[in-house]
Length: 128
Image (cartoon, rainbow, N blue to C red; front, side, top):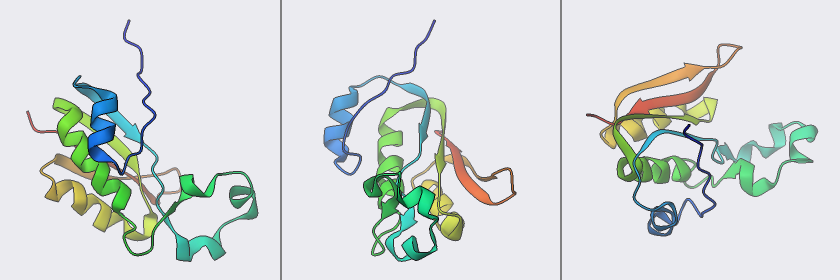
């Protein structure tokens, strides 16, 4: 039976994260990176702001896709050929987020809606 593997690392330290993970090939990567721009904080519900660590929620306004760009680089290194990933995204910049993964060379890049039909995730596959 295969078991999930969890890795604690600084995602923006790409080489450190790759080193912490090692060299296995993964068939699936999932991530819920910080994706809310700091400027959007005023629109957030108190129940989210009061319970979630801000470092888990907010991406910098100057580069709101910083974490997604890092995930793209790491996924190229860590996904097995044909492996896939799904990553949560900011609904306001869904197309731009998908473009990060397309530009990195992934195939089958799709924006996936949530239960309310809002763009919520991006899925992609590493070419065979």
